[in-house]
Amino acid sequence: MARLARAMSVCVAMKRPPGKDDSAKPKRSAYDKALGLLALREHSRKELKTKLRQGGYEGDEATAALDRLGEQHYQDDDRFAEVLLRSRIAQGYGPLRLRVELKSHGLTDTRIRALLDAAEVDWDVSAAVQLRRRYGSAGTADPAERSRRAQFLLRRGFAAATVRSVTHAEVDEANDIS
Picture 1 (tube, rainbow, N blue to C red):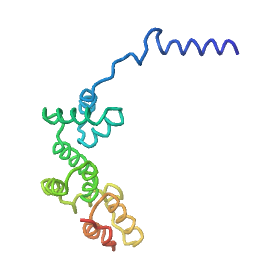
Picture 2 (cartoon, rainbow, N blue to C red):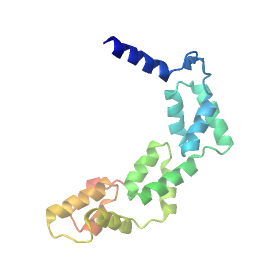
Picture 3 (cartoon, rainbow, N blue to C red):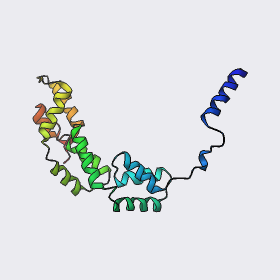
Picture 4 (tube, rainbow, N blue to C red):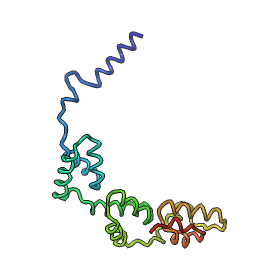
């Protein structure tokens, strides 16, 4: 037992060298923290503000840092939205899901509509590609299977009319929120 305790104390001592105290390390500024986050990937202003608050930065300091990043064009909600939109379209998500996700990042309905229109995506083709990727190219006459396929597309954010045309299944219009 004593041997185990001695081995554990040696392991603990090896993890943290003597004299090095993490609390003595100066805290990064909100600007540096946000810039580090932006170096990894694009973030919306709302997302950065949330992460800075979670990191313990005060509202004024976080707002000033975000304003500075915006002035320097390091953070841009329009650029973020375009990157996110392209990424999600490539992943096979539909317009309803994209609209909700962009809205959660603080974009306005007008801007979201403009971005979706500018994307020029044929949602019927996109839904058909997702269906083929998931279920193969063979169609089905089984109503239960068509319903399963329709639900899959609805969960991915495609409109009911699109799902109906691709799967030839009856779809509830209540799922279509334009």
